[in-house]
Length: 212
Image (tube, rainbow, N blue to C red; front, side, top):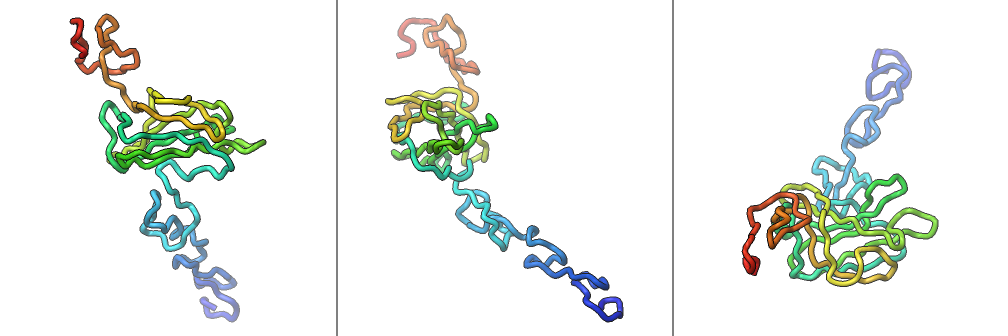
């Protein structure tokens, strides 16, 4: 025994102790100190983790719901997606969110922006559950900025066809998405007044034809 007496002694050298070293090298530990996501491709990869705890996330919004039906949202290569008025960069992400049973936003599907035509699978809720979009539920959009790591909700969304709502096996297309502060002309008497603009960018014009 660690104190000079007969009997079991744990890693803490205390008489009567049964504590053992865990896989992290911590006496009496439960492996939590070195557990985490060990997948280098995951967004929450932990370089210090040596034990994978199943927490890896494949997108900056989390993992896609595991349900049995989805709608497809087409995102064309010429779509206009901005954050604070600036086009998003390659590697940023676009996601749609639904309201869960607590009234909080939950990730329902997304895609990485690569500058080319892509699509989002928006996953619907299974019968008797709240694990995806309900029929007719509007999409709440958000954008992940690859440069800042911030996630920003969109204040303005336009569809090129279809509706901005979920339906099982539905099909729609995104035309534009403005996240963050929407710049534009905020003077209601100007020819190019933008009622959705939140910050005036000095673009207001008061002469007919100046918006051509």
